[in-house]
Length: 297
Image (tube, rainbow, N blue to C red):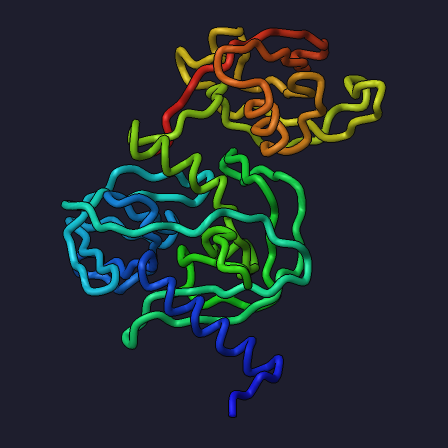
């Protein structure tokens, strides 16, 4: 007699999802280093966590029963995506992409000595688009309720319907995040085609500093960003920004944290002009910088 209880059905469904993932979960073996997990994103390319991928002379990739050599195609620390180019194509198909709802079940998958390892989690929260400290735009802030292991970093996270939510990543304070599949797709496509992801750049090193009372904007902004260094021939240097200036706003948005400036660069886009309001030598001056592209390392 077949057991049709909900728990048995759920268990069978989760096992089936894990087995099906064998066509795209990748085991990545960097030369002389420990295994990490990746995702066969395209027949000739595997996506991995940029922060988990060590520099190595070469890489070996295993998907199912196939093993191929691979080389680094490119890294994008801003979205925590790196791509390995395979020596030959491995056929596999990714599931459709989806954005989960809060409270939805999710499976975090990774490569292990015994094949694919799975960890059941719940989607704790789903927020709007956000910007990483390195300036990358992440389509949604998806947080899981389970603490992921180091080996899970870069592994696929799928929903109960089998759709791909994204790749797992360990955030600040070991928070378990998911880089949405749409974000990964965008970064991976650029890395495969160009080897890098271009983002807006001003060429400034900034540090928060208290604004003298006499120079505070009408909004009573108390903190600005002191210009510690200006890159020669960079966009800010061309706009006349000097070391020692205090950046008060960029694009009309108060500049109280470096990431706030990064958001403005992302919003404006390469080639557009950004108005900078600066405190210099006891006076307020404005300048316009043309945002240029800087390739990621």
